[in-house]
Length: 575
Image (cartoon, one colour):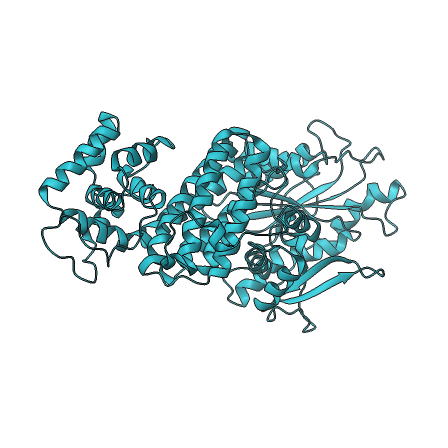
């Protein structure tokens, strides 16, 4: 249930005309009163002898008696809406909800006969509107401090009592919701999202990995947005507004939104805070690359490999549970997700876009981020953006699975951190993002894991036994037996063989990979270890062209059907 306190107005009759009228898009049906300060209050919707003026005059009487009106905002307006999946409530139920809301907000406290006059109008199945005039019967002004927060608190109680969808408690850091008019306009124009939401997503993608104002505005222009800059008489830039080229008002002019109206962290001062934390010089790709990074890892593949390493280091920081450091990592993680969504291949694009969209709520809380501690992730986001779009096959397709695997761990760690801090909305957003990442991982990992599975299955029996002995020596007994029984075990065996061929000690490498973070919550420990080992040992993520070590036959140039990996995916083995 979503209660919303609207901007106060000056014309009682004007709001009544709207509430009882057909609506902006003829969406109002059967407008009528469900409750009011007086059970005998006239209802212009059901009583043919009652008029809007009759109800308006009664509502305004205490205001006029106290010498009010004269253009001052005295009309209080609250809408209360249920979720689409909630049952349709009766008029009697909505009437009781209205009485609880005016009592909780201070409009008409329970047992106070001198409260403000109010009326609740229903003109749709899923919501009501409450109109009240801000003068009590005793002439005093009502105390409405934190009325929105009190309405939210009462809504949480009502949800539990009526069996409605339980919403998470917010902390005032969420982005502004689209208005009803914006939602109706989007529906009329057959848009998937409202212009406000489209702009928020586009601006966030433009921010990902930027280092200067100039670069940010260049990206906004490249994304096709209309941009206006607010400049002081001194020439200093104060802010910016953006608009979609095809979003126009009734006069045919573009509808502009400021950054702060899109989301609190998209205002120019907040963005400048990010840029000021960026180093003045950024290492070249070669300086950032792990030792021994192959030339094949240039472009999208190299960017994804380095992003996977940066994300893994962020997971370790989150595990330290230092609030200011964690907050910084989550901001950087949001930029990495935005950059991944922007450069993803077609088969993972939708899931990554949805993950980034959900996780943006988890990047904001009242915990202040420590300066500079998101630098590595912001650099990774920059590399992803500049590395170009991934083709979804070969090395960049396999490294996409690798980085999604790492990001899933970071997002899951973020959900746990927010839950410990009582950030209910942020924790729910992180969990939702994790679900989308799980789906994206399945799409990205299916082919490369299928190839690895086939390579492992083709290992000579003696080599298979040797790799199984490595697992038993490096992992605790119970975990070792679980790994050896998983569908992804052949892929891990092939990875251990590749690591040995590259000159690594597979047992030591495996013990290190397993000890870096707990694996008990992983859906498939073998899959997690595959990507950790290939990243730590700098092994190619795409193995279609690698020679088969100790194989019984030659692997074809194109990988086999990925039925084993697909069966694993259907069981949910995506971390």
